[in-house]
Image 1 (cartoon, rainbow, N blue to C red):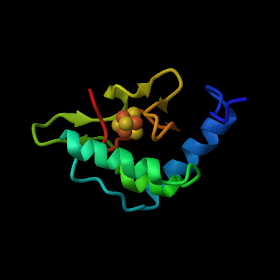
Image 2: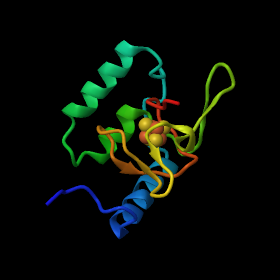
Image 3: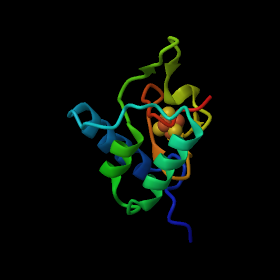
Image 4: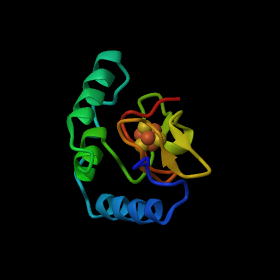
Length: 113
Ligand code: SF4
């Protein structure tokens, strides 16, 4: 049986709340540099893969999570809700190295459109 959380499960809600509390409590994450270049994307993804699966804080820090959208240099707002990895029905990030419940107005530096 898969150990992925079931869609819309209570575990999603619990984990989303835990992440939100960490972010709102001021967890310092690696918001920049943003992962716009292939090499940096690959490096961050590799570092995420090296983390223990249960290392929630490590994932948030390394991916540069924020509890609000990030505004890029050209004024483009980077938010989970416009990211290619975001599942809107489930409010979930399906980037394989993250696989975390998120809020639509959160962001991370692996945002991609
Ligand atoms: S990869 Fe996209 S959906 Fe996942 S946390 Fe980052 S911005 Fe949000």
